[in-house]
Image (tube, rainbow, N blue to C red; front, side, top):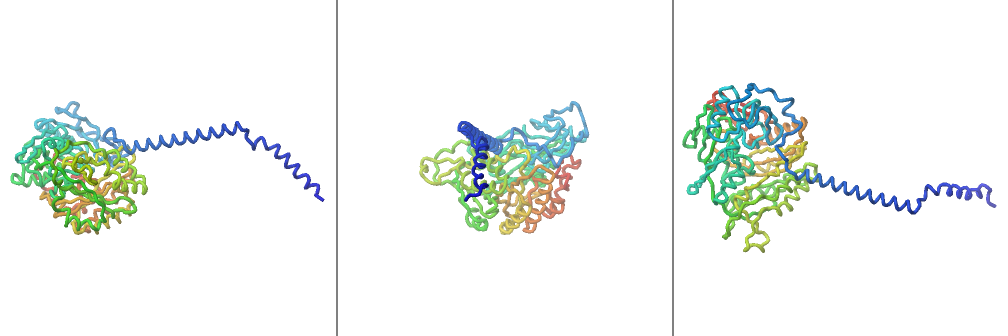
Length: 553
């Protein structure tokens, strides 16, 4: 027999179910409405994510609309100080009165008296006289691709050479006479239709000729050496307004001081540079282990038919500074077609995207390295003649094209980040142990390395030479947060890298941030005191100055 309470349970459950049913069971129409709202919500969410992704892609690929001037600046705190001299209407034309100036690092915003942009020698002489007569300091700026205030000084009158761009070519003797304010991009555009190319220039074509002379730049022609090796003569204005024609035969001491002299001796008006015929090259890319590079270079790449060469080390965490891509340009045998016109590279936007994406972390760095190996070669401005159109590897480029339009992608618009260049030189037989040491330092400091290049340099026979003999260089392109902490971390990293270089008998490049100690400068450049003494010999009033000289001179 069932208990009475047991008989009541089903009846009680039916009553509870009947009461709850309206709230637990949706009518058919209400169920369809909810599903529609969910579907619409999902679509809107996907659209929002797509828009956000599109905006992020645009942010990562877009070029800045103007010069980057970091909003938060750890190197310059507070409002600009008043210039020591204020003249309402100075007797010279100023492109900018007062205000501030910065460089490619965007970390060195500095107040200046003003910026003059003279168009000829006489206008330049008036600027020099005005500064000299009124107790102003002078600094010299081109494209300002240095990163340590080498192109300006607090409250100085800055000379921008951008209006000095004239060029003339002596094709018979293969000599180009070019004013200091012309950029390498403009030089290549001038030489190309005339059938010639530069012998040495920087790896990027954005800087000016005068700026490259002031740092004795080098590039991807691994056989030619530094820019100094191709400079026949210089026209230089000293602090008294006199113009000197200097060369290895005429005033050789002044010539060797101005080359790589960081604008401390005078103003380069023009230079006479050796040029070479523009020819077609076969472009090739190969991947190797970094241990293999020194032997490969000595036995093969340093000889004919290879004309241009550089390497990129992996910046991906899984193969950091171990895997290496070698880019070579060798003589194109049997080429008979006309040399094609220069064209701007299509690599800028995708390169800028992958560089910015690499700043997001390990995944971005792996993707960037994969893209460099597999995707970016598709954007190379190759010329394929009809006779080779069916061949698997038939990428031909002219020498000028190989040097043209390079690395405009370095300019980004991310406000919280900036990109810092560093370069270290070591004897060729010490490259592998140096890379091992550099890897350890960079990993310990958690550096976000966007690019790591290997170049070749040779002695330049100048006063402040970074290469006492044949050396390899490691060029680092590093992301830095625009904060005081980011600045402190970069200083610590730089000093550790300089020490690692010194242990291998190497040196470091001086156009970049002034994060190294005076004793490190003295160890790397034993002749630096003599260099500064020569500066005071040729400029006794120390009219020409910059932040580099103020820090170490």
